[in-house]
Image 1 (cartoon, rainbow, N blue to C red):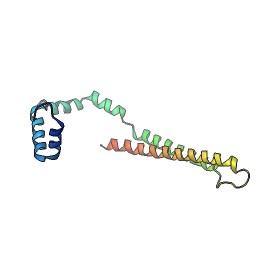
Image 2: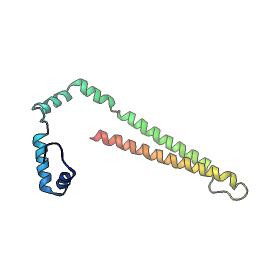
Image 3: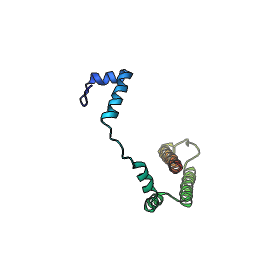
Image 4: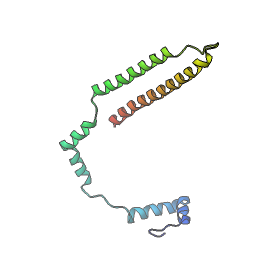
Length: 136
């Protein structure tokens, strides 16, 4: 195998043959990887312990009260929209001459309700995502 130009046949051989793949990995590790400085770990730990780095990282985090307020606002908005949709939607499709006027309204209200359900689901997943990020 050459250093730079590999043909499709060579790549197929590497893909199909474990020994060729191991040899290719060994050559890449030996010839093409850049070694890290010896003091990289210590310098990263030292830099992370400096106050200005800790302050900038802490500025992005939300306090518990702020997270609780955001969650309460989301739940309150979902409840308000749910009550509004329940008030606007008829219990069933009406029968009779008014059907042609109320069916489009009913269908539009169902579309709005489905959209709100999807948005509330995405917001609840967003809350869980932020909580998971904090745990890491």
